[in-house]
Image (cartoon, rainbow, N blue to C red; front, side, top):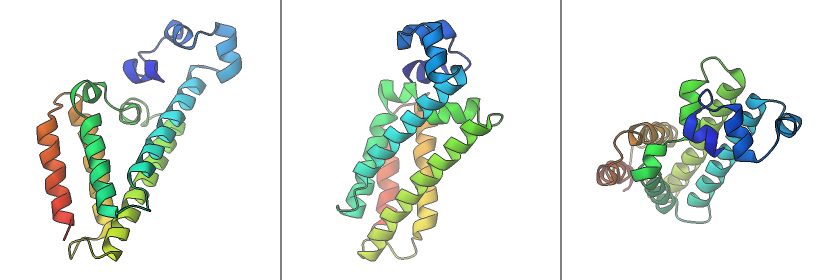
Length: 178
């Protein structure tokens, strides 16, 4: 996963993968079929980890707005400094492969839908608790948050200014809260 994340799909060579996995060519092909199969497994793992982190941050047992703040703060951290410059495997795969690789496109579309659903559910919980500002529609706000968070991943590749990112997410969440 780390090699694909750092080098991209096309920038990753078979020798890179053999070194990273510590497998022989035959073992790698036996385990994953080919480079594309290994990439899909790596992308699946990355997505699973991202969703698990999101579930932890947006824990339905906790206050919904506090969970959203935790989620947004996590994205500030992941899009700042060295982590920001490294970027996001999902965004990189979307830009490099999704237009012509149906399997990658489907995985990324499914990930974004699942992420948006979790955000919408958290916003709906905040609305039910009377914490959401009047006029904030959870479905629309969730899409806005999805676009902001993934956009932060892109911007963080070249300008990973933590202070500005913190101000942006604070401004947005303050608009959502009563």
